[in-house]
Length: 124
Image (cartoon, rainbow, N blue to C red; front, side):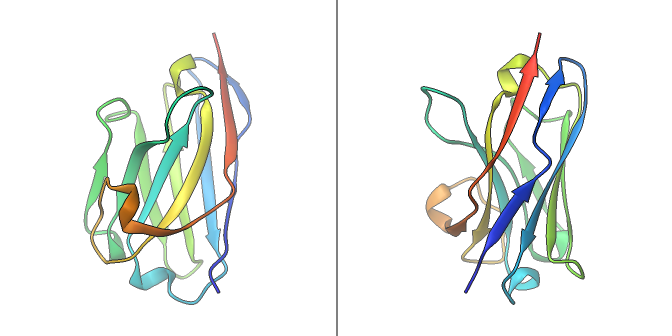
């Protein structure tokens, strides 16, 4: 059984930084691509970042490119999202997701397990 638990979200001022974590309590973390998505109030869920198995490839949404960094520690079964230069538009519930395959992808349909989310709020 896969269980993904996100943490690290909180209220932060614009320009600040946060690091989100996602712990996978399952047994197949190292064999899966992982991703981060977010959903702001009144908006659809959107892709943020993803990383392939073993971390060889990363992809980002244009809105976060150059500000966010995704990484993974397979020994700890943990996915990270380093968020820098935060802006109010980054305010959302952030979800981590486990991919069905090995390669990083933007498509939410390619992820079959999701966490409950961690709230990030950026004040202006």
